[in-house]
Image 1 (cartoon, rainbow, N blue to C red):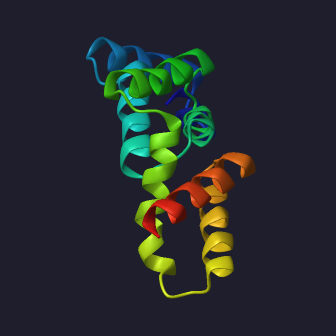
Image 2: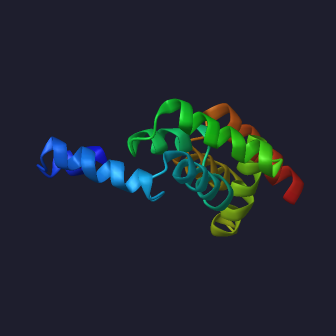
Image 3: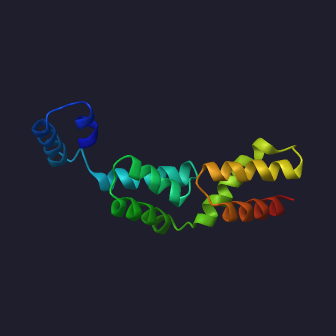
Length: 134
């Protein structure tokens, strides 16, 4: 919020005052924001740990808060990154159905890469899910 206000040329004292009032009112809480954001990105959008943390950092959340929020999603929900990546593949599988197997694999791996998963994990997940679906 501070950066957003400073970027719009508000005076430093006005920015500090506004942020202080928002924090005091409970309307500005990085921990709550990071927790909700991470939960949404990981469980709903099926993004990787790495991409979720990067998006939080881009939004001005401190690294320690971002790391804790992402770790909390995995521990609180009892999911692993493998479960998230498998769910992402299954979700996207409908979109590539009917294509040749090589094309399906290539498209699914590219989809996972855009979601922040590494190449090795993406390949393994695609092969695992395609084998399960066969």
